[in-house]
Length: 183
Image 1: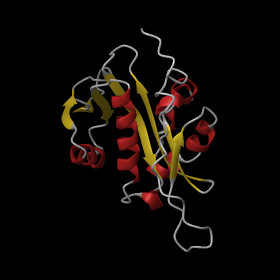
Image 2 (image 1 turned 90 degrees about the horizontal axis):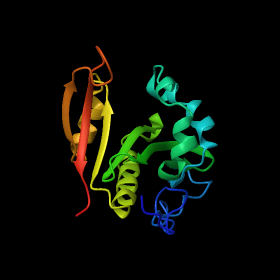
Image 3 (image 1 turned 135 degrees about the vertical axis):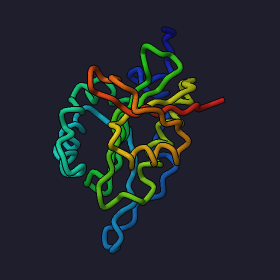
Image 4 (image 1 turned 120 degrees about the vertical axis):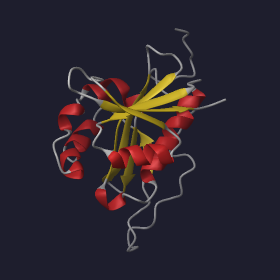
């Protein structure tokens, strides 16, 4: 692996600011919630995320989002905040095994923010940073029953395959998503 001094904590380039082109939040006295600001995650964000994911999904999903993802991949993950409230997040990383690949592990958007384009914005920011790191492909997976996720990924230009039999072991099929990025 080539060491690049322009990298911050083995994450995105140090010059990457995921919120640099975001509009300023709406004032607190406005009846419209502040536009979310997006920033790079820090390990301490795990506590805020894990307290909401099961409610946001309406089922238990916390076990598939262990703390290790933010302990080790915070520099390549994103947090969307509206004031002091968590509006959404994207947990992703640059594959250490497949040099040209970036991987999105988990994305969540507050139920009141769904349909606003926030998930697309989080993906766009992550993909832009992955391209800046010379990644040429971004991948993700979901359970076969999550047709909303499959439709979302198709709308973003991902190829959806599957269900892939035994992807996560015996009797654990998954849908796979892949999209070419960059040049």
